[in-house]
Length: 371
Image 1 (cartoon, rainbow, N blue to C red):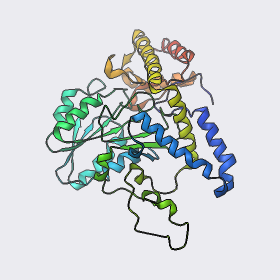
Image 2: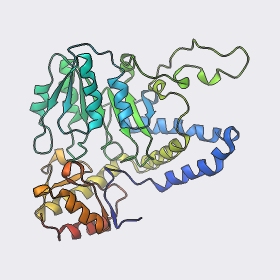
Image 3: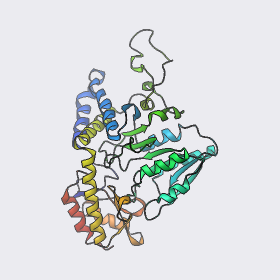
Image 4: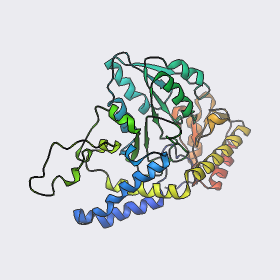
């Protein structure tokens, strides 16, 4: 079913036509022939790895592919060698995928410290107060999934560095919509599903591990492709070995056979994103979001995050009195305007590909809905 305005890229991004075409080719022309043609698909993962590395300003060896954000976060939460008394900083009202993996560590004696949410976001002073000498890691989202608050990752990294703490970022609500250079913003780990702003298929995602942090992940899965020379292991008699060294790259966590169909689509989506350029994408996303934000406020609607740098994301959320967010969203959806309601807010999330007429339709409808 098509909608008059699709404004829910923070929920599920629309799969790009180029990605659909790549997946259709894989499904119809390659996979039905099994090993005879499957080699045509192997190059997609290498191309996708290079594209992600360019997007994050890192090396391809620091990039791995995972099914979703949760898997990437768990690689860190489950992989580090935790000690009783270690502390992890989490953020109030963050998405559960960036809280629950750290909560599980409490059974190992790890303590969680929480940064309170104020006015839809987080204040630097509260972040600083939550970080102490025993802080082992700060688990932060680049953009809050519900309010759209954009975290100052550089400031968080600086505060963590003072305490000798690591930084793990849930970037699912920014990667593909906003620039994020790990060369300039020295996060240690990052995870993001591809099914939102990256325009890839569900079940694909990205994990980044800074090269000098890889050795810290002591308990990570290592399947067939996690070892050097694994691809040659069964090409001749006497070559079956069990003593191959682990790969010295983030890709060692990728396991064995992966989703070839999904990777074909993801690589195609990344190629299109690279052709446009992340700076151009971000400029368009912020332009549309600013237009929605200003118009909604002018109509008397309450913004979840006050205007300013902290609101500079692709998410515009409205706080509706008397828990009326769900009812307002239902009216918008009934009018053909796809939005969502995380945490009771009306969340509106345009992308680079959103047409001006889609925003026009939203604003026309918002004008008829009482705040």
